[in-house]
Image 1 (cartoon, helix red, strand yellow):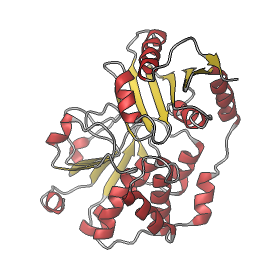
Image 2 (cartoon, helix red, strand yellow; image 1 turned 45 degrees about the vertical axis):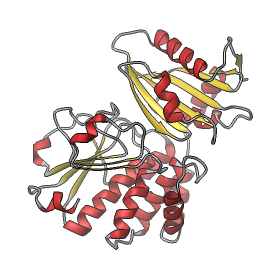
Image 3 (tube, helix red, strand yellow; image 1 turned 135 degrees about the vertical axis):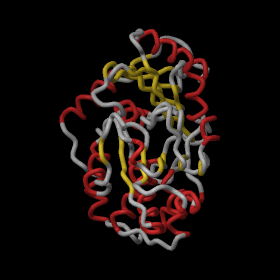
Length: 329
């Protein structure tokens, strides 16, 4: 990776991540920017697209990773010396990098490995790792860069959320990094992020989601209708998978003409990344690993109900469940 920057043209590196970024994505971008600045004195411009709506994610953006700028249309790409992606891949369908441009660096941990990665000069993609920020920590450690309390807290929370406190999709590298960061982080700020306040819309959405949930044996489906924010389904799936006896959860909902899918599975049960590949509809894209996965299906004027019907049918077939289901409540 050193050679890429030693020969790069002057200017900042543009760092992009997936739409509606989560803590792992936000922390990974900040870690990469720190590496570039400390080792090569190269500035970065961190840009995200979509919405940061979850209360803890908003708090993280405010207190831990304020460097990120919001742009739904990525402009003036030629002013950057290089393009980098974190927690996503070119062609994944969940980022705003134009197809006319290729990043020179990609860090990610999601299934599947995209064909477009072959055009990337430097790619570190490790699906067996629970969080992308774990990969970035190795580079900081190799460069003998000690994370300051704010960066350490961001990286710690990125690992914690993506692995659910080291309980899902975790690798030995995640565990080691998690422990090392414990002594460096700012515990007071971590509490502010973890326990960020919820407004009444969050509780209304929770009520609607619980009413929508239906049980099909050991599978749960929640058709959430119009989503207030894109990752509302992911929040609901995180909750529903905790139901005793459940093996897998599918939550679906529409936001701005896109059907959002979230799948969660119990640890040591179905692999969510493989499961979502079996249910997503073309031309939609999906990815994931371990016990969590997500996808997006552009509706392009088509019926959301028909698309959800087909996805739910595929999901139940994959889970070997059938019937009309019963209400959770």
